[in-house]
Length: 242
Image 1 (cartoon, rainbow, N blue to C red):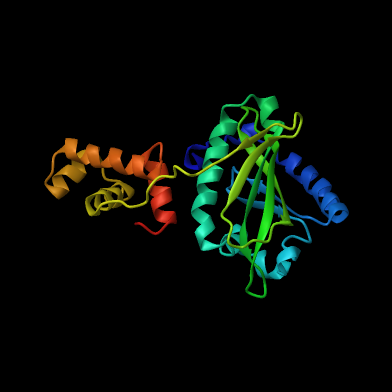
Image 2: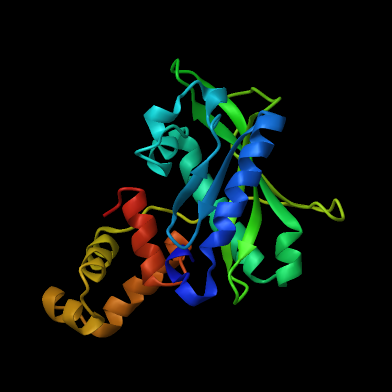
């Protein structure tokens, strides 16, 4: 889904981001939460509050240059996949909402992160939408990070979507998460797809029919829970399959 997001510069006003930075910095000082703004157009964190990640004991000099990669590396390895699936499901759900409804909902994640003394702690990360582009596509999201009152570090990832206007909660589940166990042939074909080869070219290279190639392509899409080959490549690369 993320790979399919397409932004046009005329649909985005970065002056709005600068205004949000001022407000968010003030809010972070008042509530003592760690806050960030995520820019889906550039696929990176656009702003950290000065106290970002203080709950984990890290300082700005440690994470500023690495941006999101620093914090992603601190997520418990057993939680990364579920978080990715929850995030993808949430974005797809938001896509189906009206513009007003998008702005009325936020997503709450609870998962484990490694703090500066090498201990995993549970955190609550709340995401809500700050700005849509002029086409109604989600552009800026704000994340508020706090320690969870539940410090059972054996618990799995939790996610729910909250309509903060009505109080209605939509629970989320990854009980039916896709399998990452691809066959050798499926991995081989996915690798060739990543290299830019078309089905006919893969067919000629592997001495199999185009129908067989397309069958394998459909199977790895289903196993990875991907809508298209771009998503499949992203998932497989992220989890070290190819």
